[in-house]
Amino acid sequence: MIEIQHLTKIFPVDGGEVRALDDVSLTVENGEIFGIIGMSGAGKSTLLRCLSLLERPSKGRVLIDGTDLAAMRGGELREARRRMGVVFQGYNLLMQKTVAENIAFPLKLEKGYDRAAVNARVEELLELVGLADKAKAYPAQLSGGQKQRVAIARALATNPQLLLCDEPTSALDPLTTTAMLSLLEDINRKLGVTVIIITHELSVVRRVCRCVAVIGDGRVCEQGLVDDVFEHPKSDAARLLLKGEG
Ligand SMILES: Nc1ncnc2c1ncn2[C@@H]1O[C@H](COP(=O)(O)OP(=O)(O)OP(=O)(O)O)[C@@H](O)[C@H]1O
Ligand SMILES: [Mg+2]
Image (cartoon, rainbow, N blue to C red; front, side, top):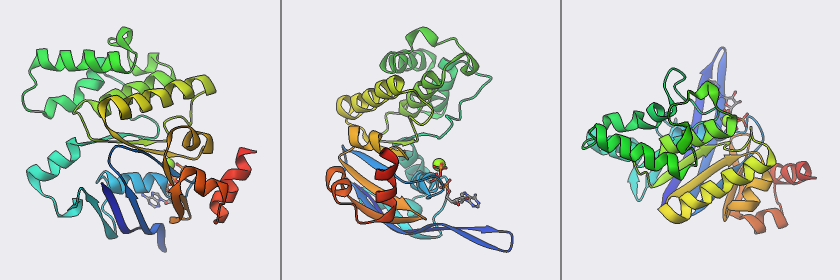
């Protein structure tokens, strides 16, 4: 279980501060696909960065299966990081490296992965994301959907229990979006990985998520089962998202 408790993130800026997250509390059960939805600038990517320890919260804490991330050090922290795969908004692939090298990258730091084991794992991951024929291609030679798949394969390399995806479909056409969501559902079901999807698209949440948190202006406006939240929205943020859906 992932528990976010009273998380606040303040960025100092010229002449003041930006409160990107303000007292955010959420619970995500293991094994589910959880949606975090909000308009641009709501604080979604900041939340993901705090969850994945790329950013230290200004206040509050993140507990994974009861353990406070911020209190972890050394080997324990490394292990916690390994158990978490992140797919960034905009992919963050290494452009000078091939698809296979990108996916192999996190395995370089792993114990017990010699060259043969790395190759076998990369092959397995390429198969999983449907890119077996692109091992030697460079990111610049791929479509957006293919780059997204490479980013997912790389995030899964160390067998994480949790996959965090920041806007996994925002740059994709409707058909590719459907394929991407099916892939994330497969990963959830077959590998038992908990998936957190960050998105501004209500259709994405409706299609794959059981529960959702709506964030607006750095705050959680409401959270619960997707159908409940969007059947009777209580917040302006949720109503705005419904309006955008048409
Ligand atoms: N490093 C930073 N320094 C100062 N302000 C920041 C920083 N990172 C984010 N912010 C601010 O925090 C707020 C939330 O940003 P964030 O990137 O989390 O939004 P988002 O919900 O992911 O938006 P989008 O949907 O456009 O990706 C914005 O007002 C942004 O300008
Ligand atoms: Mg973002």
